[in-house]
Length: 293
Image 1 (cartoon, rainbow, N blue to C red):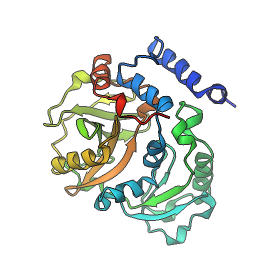
Image 2 (spheres, rainbow, N blue to C red):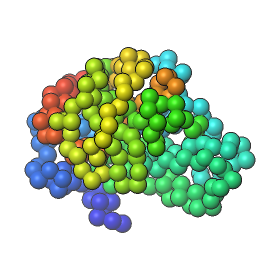
Image 3 (cartoon, helix red, strand yellow):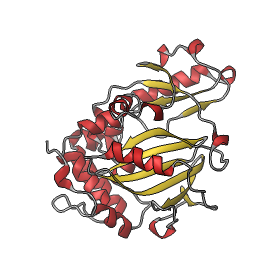
């Protein structure tokens, strides 16, 4: 058991307090949270996060999308399995995407099934399904997820507003049904990704970001998505009644596709926004909307 897992077993809230102190060199204000990180952490432990558990689950969120009447935004699903050993490889097409439902950064894009090392893939996903974010980042809503893995269609990067190495991830921050800004991430490589922040009129705001060796300043401007208005309509519908959530979308061939919903971005320890911008977003989080435990 590592140190984080130990403290999580003792007290997830204590683990969160220690991590916050480590990252920001100040104590987390549990009694009067102000910025977005503080309010995310307050919500993790003081509100009913059952919706978080449903919607942060990369498979079961499909139920929520269906209930909102947005099935047309879902990427085609090829299969779902509780164990990596149960994957029916013969039933999958030559190209597909594999995901664990309860993790992050564990996506495998297979472009040629004949070249896939199935044995190592099974080992990798067996390990992923056996662990939970709740153990390392003090995120209790992940502990309630029933692990599984899914296979989905590969979206074509060449059919985006500009051709990039990976899909452009339009991460749209929303507060009770009101989209606030778009954090665009693209050209993901091992250990780094290019990022740029845009307002709802698609004006770029680098002054809101803190660039690091991982989150690199985008070297070029992204064109405004063809379906931006539709994207904003989608995220408004999905986030209505939720104090804060980040909804991630893609655009391929002018059509928006749902990616995921994230309620505890970076575990509530975001270091890629300025303190001023985090405070601005924190002011938009109405904690009275949260259903208390």
